[in-house]
Each structure stands twice: as structure tokens, then as C-alpha cells.
Image (cartoon, rainbow, N blue to C red; front, side, top):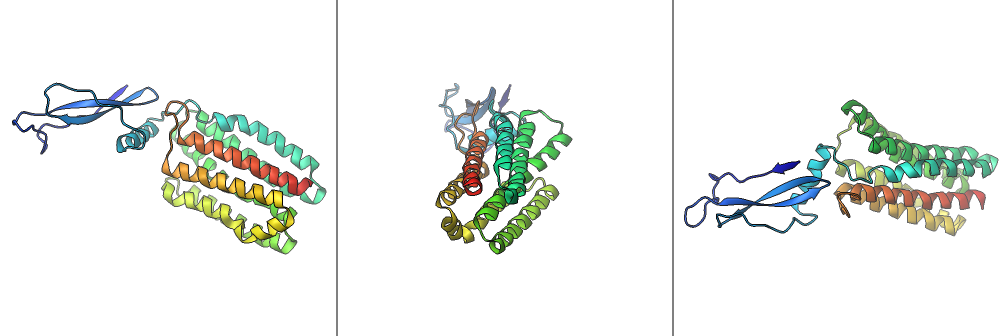
Amino acid sequence: MHILGYLPEDLGGCRSVTGQPRKACYSSVTYQGVGYYCGMESNSLEPRSEPPAKRGTPVDDAAVRLAELLMIKPKWRGWIHTVTAPLALAAGLVLVILAPPDLKVACAVYAVTGVLLFGVSAVYHRGNWSPRVKIVLKRLDHTNIMLVIAGSYTPLAWALLDRQQAELLLWVIWSGAILGVLFRLLWTNAPRWLYVPIYIALGCGSLFYLPDFFAANVASAVLICIGGVLYITGAVFYALKKPNISYEHFGFHELFHALTVLAFAAHYIAIAIAVLG
């Protein structure tokens, strides 16, 4: 399918110095089988070829937006989280089984939020849903990001901080997560520049307690920082919709998903060290 753009001849500047109408020539940009033709002015009466538009240009950004509207997905869309979901379930069960009695509930909260994050994301991104179902899954997918952040803090705070610190941190984080969930449920079409900073702010909530985490367990604290950096980096890529390594297979969204998996793995190891060590 090709979407053809053209330059009307009666627009100002669309005539050559000789007064003859300029003919538009086109260069193609491909987004998984969809051709986007960019109209270019030429003094020549014959069309000439132009090099394909580079990634990151306005034409490229328009192609990404159009692909989203037409629901054209890179081939890897959703597969990363589809594979991760059962692994997160198995890893969560192991953690809960091995955790000491006073930390089992906290670990179970973390495990459930992880399975929800990857499971719902896999269902949402792999299927071709009706508009009504899609908007429900989109709401759940976005709210689960905030839940997994709060879920990750739960066993870490309970295992590494004293009870007063843990209760205060978890009260703040879970309150922020619930408010964020309500925000995304009530304003589904909120712009990315507005809700992505909420994810980042929620993820940075433990910075005030970072010295206490390091004092309790250096290895866990380092992994907490690594996971946080990975989450934030993925959120920035998601907000910017860049970089697109391969439009056909692995775009910015797939990179975002890959970074969430790596961040989740870093935090899982941090939790395992804190809880089982």
C-alpha cells in the first residue's frame, strides 16, 4: 500500500524560474511494507530519484505516526514480554517459596505485579483488538508500570530498611502509584510528555533512602540503581519514540520493552539478595 503526497502547482514557489510548473518527485520511506512518498520540488520536468529519508527526520516521524494510526507493528512487537511473562511467573514463585515467613507477602506482591506487567503487555501488543478492547488493555498496560515500580519497592524496603523507614517509603510510593493508576484510567489519551515523567518520578522515590540501602546491602543497592537507570532510559526512548533500530522488526517500543525486562531482572536479583541473603 502506498500513500502518495503531492505538491499543488498553484502554491507559491511551485513554479520554476521559467514560469513552467514544477513537477514533484518522490522518495520512498518504508515502514514494514508501507511506502510513504515524500514530495520534493524540482526545476526539471522529469522526476528524479532522491535518497531515502533518514531516521529522525520529520518525514520519518510522520511515518511512525501514520504506522501507529494504521496499527502497523514491527514483527517483534509484544514478543519480548510474551516470552518474559512465564519466566516472571516461575521466578516469582521461587522467590515466594524460598522467602522467610515475614517477607513472603512482600515478595508475593512483587511477583504478582511483575506477572501483570508482562502478561497484560503481551496480550495487548500481540493481538489485533477492537477499539473498545484495545483501550481497556492500553489502560491496564500503562497502569501496570506504576504497580510494578511500587511492587519492586515492597520487598526491598521491608528487607533492607527499618520498619519505620519501610512503612513511610511504601506509603509514599503506593500512594503515588494509586494516584498514577487513577490518572491513566481517567485520562487514557494523556500525552506521553505528561505521564512518562510520572513513571520516572515514582521510580526515583527511593533516592532519599539510597544511603540506607547501601548501608544494608551494597550489592542490592547497586542493582537497584542499575535497574532504575534502565527503567528511566527505556521511558525516555518511549517518550521520544526513538531510536528505531529496525522499523520492520525492532523499533523504539521494542527497545523500551527490552530495557524493562533488563531492569526487572536487575531488581529481581537485588530482591533475591536482600531477601535470601
